[in-house]
Length: 74
Image 1: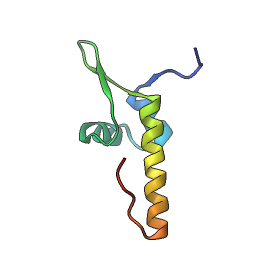
Image 2: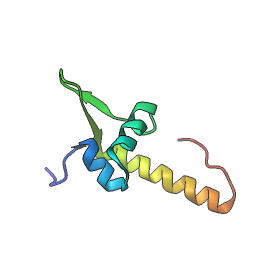
Image 3: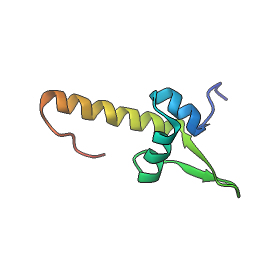
Image 4: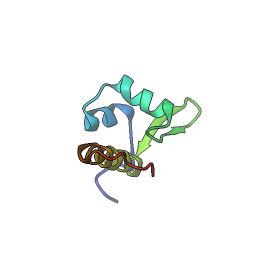
């Protein structure tokens, strides 16, 4: 297995995105950042793949805005 965990805690996601943990929870709650709830206590985790896809989408949107074109979802 890789040294990088498959799932990240909201605190780890916040560090990667350089935002607050509260902002990460908002992204998860609104569905902008897909997350899974694990176990009875309901701890939230974000997969590496979901985080990478979210970042890629942000980059596509920024590039489209730079060119003056709105990016298509997906």
